[in-house]
Each structure stands twice: as C-alpha cells, then as structure tokens.
Amino acid sequence: MPTPRVLFVCHTGSISGAELVLLDLVVPWAGQSAFLFEQGPLRQALADRGLNVSVSHSAQSFSGVRRDSSLLKVIPIVSGMVAVIRELIGAARRHDVVYANSQKAFVLSAVAAWLSRRPLIWHLHDIISPAHFGAAQRRIQVFLANRCAVRVIVPSRVAADAFIAEGGRRNLVTVVPNGLDIAPETAAPAEIRRELDLPAGPLIGVFSRLAEWKGQHVVLQALSKISDVHCIIAGSALFGEEAYEERLRAMVRDLDIVNRVQFLGQRSDVPRLMRAMDAVVHPSIDPEPFGRTLVEAMLADVPVIASDAGAASDILEDGKAGTLVRPGDADGLAAAITQVLDRTPAIAEQVRYAETRARSHYGVTQMIDVISALIRGA
Ligand code: UDP
Image (cartoon, rainbow, N blue to C red):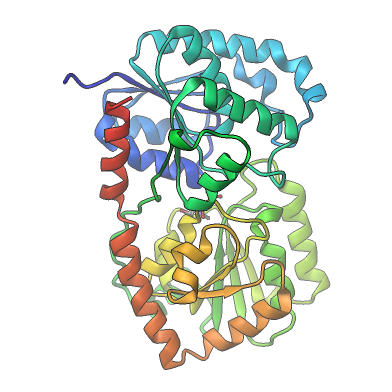
C-alpha cells in the first residue's frame, strides 16, 4: 500500500504537551506536511523533523478566540475562519489524510476535510468538559466529530469517557496513551544542582505551563505551611495566562516565601531538572487528560505527588506509582510533601515501581506505531 500523504494541522505555534506529542508522532512521516495557524517555535521543530511546514496567512484575525468564548463573541471573526478553511481546503486536496492536533485545528479542519472529501483524524488532547469549553463549543466539537472524523484519538480513558458523555460516538474513539522517549539522566542530583545553581536542601519542582487549572498556586499555599522546603516552578504562560503568572509572583511575596521559590520560565532541560528534585508535584485543580509531566517524573526516578483528578490515578496506578492528593487541597499537599521528603522505604519502592511502569506503559514507539497504523487505515 502506498504511503498516504498526510497533512498535520495545529492551531498554535507554541510548544506545550500536545505539540510535544505531535513532534514525536510525526517522526515516521518526514516529507509530509504541516499547516499551522500561527508562527512560533513549533514551525522550526516540525521542519527539523523533515516536515514541509506552512503557516496560515489568515488565522491572525481570530487568534483572540479563547476556549471559553461564547458563540456571540465568535461571530465577528467568522470571516477569518472562513479564510483559513479556504486555505485548509486547498492544502487538504493535495493530501490523502488530514490529522488535526488540537480542538481549534479540528473544528476548521473538519469543515475543510468534509468539503474536500478527505478522511480526518482528530487527536483530542483535552477533556471535553464545562471546565474548559463553553456549551456551544462542546456541541460543535462533538457534532463535527460525529459527522466528519473517521477517528478520534485520546490519550486516556477519562478523555474518552468525557467525549462519549458529551454525545461523541463511542466507535470513533481509540485510546492511545502518550508515549515518551527520554534517555536516562546519569548525572547525580547534587551535581545537577551545582551546575544549575539550585538550592542544596529539600527541593520540589512543578513543571507545567502557567495556567490556573494547572494549580501552581496550590503549591505556593502548601509551601507556606511547611518550612525549609524550596521550590522551582518551570514553565511559562504559553496561552495568554500572563495575569495568572502575575498572581503567582504576588502570592510568593504575600506569603513571604520569596527566598524559597524560583520561577525558571520555559525550560528545554526538564528531564535534567527533574532528576535534581526531591519530589515533582503536579497540582492540577481540574482533571488532566493525560499529564506527560507525570511520566517524565516517573522516568526521572523521582517521587511524584499529583492531584487525584483525570488520568493521574491511571498513570500512577491508584497511588502505587506516586502519591495522590485531593485537587486544590493545600493542607493535604503540604502533608504529602512532608511525607514524601522523608523518603521512607515505601517511597523508595514507589519510585522504583514508577520507573518500571513508565517504561512498560508509556513508550514512544508504542504510541508512534499505533497512530501510524491509524493514519494508514484512515
Ligand atoms: N515543559 C517544558 N518546559 C517547561 C515546562 C514544561 O518542556 O518549562 C513540558 C513538560 O516537560 C511536559 C509538557 O511541557 O512534557 C507538558 O505536558 P503535560 O501533558 O504535562 O501538560 P499540557 O501542557 O499538555 O497540558
């Protein structure tokens, strides 16, 4: 069977978890195409993997549309969307399969794929729920998926259940856990800390883009309840969450923990940083559709503390591979941090188990093979 010509479509030019997944899964598809709605580092990263990348000329006109926008706010920018759909139709006609890697990419690709009669795969990296999408958006997404998609790929059972609960067709859905390919970091934690100028004492880290639902504020509240523990916060406000970043910085001052918290901004050396931590905290206050950060921490041989919401309990096997806490519960998190930093034999065993589990369940080759087969079968 000849290799299908694939058009990967992405709304953003920034690189967060969903785009990191895309960068892995396109590896066998060098020579194929990507279409982005905006400029950004993703363009070069895809080009580095051998994709022919083009960027929309028209998408800027609706880049202000947020996930919580009401239908009324969306109407004035419809003409911008129509222009992008036209571009997408042209691009889709030169390909055999369209692969949409985000919700915004999917909605416009659905119309384009339908009009150009091309099969469309939606890689849905989100939990479709009221916490993240307005009612109109949810209805439109599910209607278009049922009408136009040949496959909806989700990274976890919770993401699948949410899609089906909103009316999505069950037989469209394939669960493909995100896979990660991370070379084991061999440097000793103390050496990494010296090299990166990190504190020598008890140190925890949070590794997510800055967004309220990612819950960095809960970690700051927890820190204020325990003494001596330092914290690094890696990640930046990638999707217009600058006000939240300001709030976090103000909280650090108000809680008088300035000397114990460092904001590191967006980093490209997460595995190395994680290896230098005494614990990695993943404090989301809303359910996570997956949480690559959890698997990265498991692979880094570091204890993980995560909110018990969404896919975390699956990934951490109900607490066997990490410590689960109630979302948004700063007291519970403070207690968990104290307990984990004691590094009892039970925690050491948990860390060993987590590493094995991450390697056996969340390998990148597994993910690439399943998704490539779905693309070929579309
Ligand atoms: N990340 C990064 N640099 C940072 C902070 C985070 O590269 O400074 C990465 C992190 O290592 C992980 C991804 O961003 O691979 C976040 O993925 P996750 O699934 O945890 O969350 P998402 O952003 O998709 O909601």
